[in-house]
Image 1 (cartoon, rainbow, N blue to C red):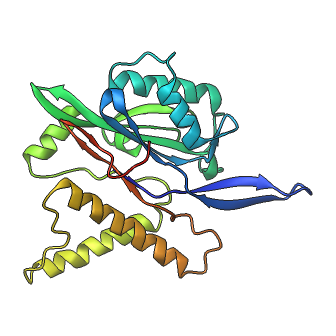
Image 2 (image 1 turned 120 degrees about the horizontal axis):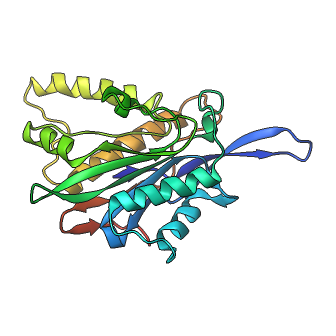
Length: 246
């Protein structure tokens, strides 16, 4: 898992004019130690009048929350967000969108298998493709990658890449970059040549950092990708924070 540390927040001047600004130094990627899981956040910069990263940290550490599985955590988070986040029409107010990527391992056919939840408001294109509809106005704990689907992917030599946040430019950029590297592979040059999870994490950092630099050299007044880039390695044996602070 990888995330930058920039967040866009809405504020107002004394005369009531609404302005937006980008802050960096936000901890958008965190660890759930009791589950050996990772969780990242995109979207709204504040929840319940608190910075979203601090709110998430408090939610994880709240002793009143009783969870022992990834699914239980996802449902608890969904229900709390439904209480605090007003129903929205995301197309009309994209900065009212909020989402969390929750990833870890579960036992499936006696094997530790990755699984992934996307807890967010708005439409779920992933679930719709499987014939499942959710109410896009509220937060839903969407099980985008249940272990049986991950197992099918892995058995065929494939993997899933999940991205959210400011992806309107980032996603096609990465796609075109991959197509270019695909042509290079015909000449025997493999990029990325990730031989382990740490090298894969460094590659994800490179992708985010490159997009951040592209924004920096653009005419955008709000470069919404930037700041420190954190990574997290998840394995069946545990979590490697890669220097991520607690």
